[in-house]
Image 1 (cartoon, one colour):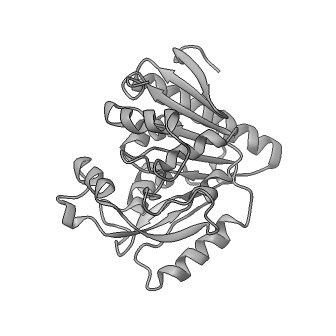
Image 2: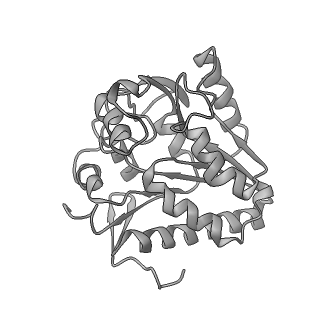
Amino acid sequence: MSSTHAPVRSFKADALDVHVFASQPDLASYVALDVRNHLAETIARNGSAAAILATGNSQIQFLKNLVALGGIDWSKVTLFHMDEYLGIAADHPASFRHYMKHRVESLVKPRAFHYIHGDCDLPHVECARYTALLQSQAIDLCCLGVGENGHLAFNDPHVARLDDSEWVKLVRLDDACKMQQVKEGHFPSLEAVPPYAITLTLPALMTARKVVCVAPEKRKAVPVKNMLQGPVNSLCPASILRRNPAAVLLIDADSASLL
């Protein structure tokens, strides 16, 4: 790994490796290179790779850097995403399918990008369909972010289960989660945010052979502090990462400011 954008500090929180970077650009450059190398090595070893990607503003620069780096035979990569609003069309500007098509799929042409159909007629059937797709091969990589309420994907505190028996489920979004979507500019008001979503559960996300969590910016300082220094429980769903020796958390000086 190049030292150009190396972390300025590293430590462990239980089983979780944590790297702190001087700036968000340094973080994004480092994680893009790390993920590129992991996917390239997995393809070289196994002939293919499967990865789960996250949406959200925290992922934009990382994904842009990853796409620009090259060095991955994307025709051998199967991609998934981790959540989608219920009742939203694939071409809606706030749809996570729209985000992934424009930022990833259209640019790298993977072997397949399996999408959660948020506008399905039967949500529980869609959950079962997506579960079967996820379980049809090993997941080599999961890239995710942390919500302002400590969620991973749409596992908000009131619906998160650290020991969930399901892999994909229908959940109701809490107001803190919906307000983050409004503040990030994805919806004009709290009322405009769909009340329900389909999400991968915490255990499903943790099945990946490598889990990379990217959580920069000042607004993530409180959830980062809670996930690293509070109890491991569903009140801060991201705290589950501390139980996972295959996980790494990448934060910047702003999101590490309360540690």
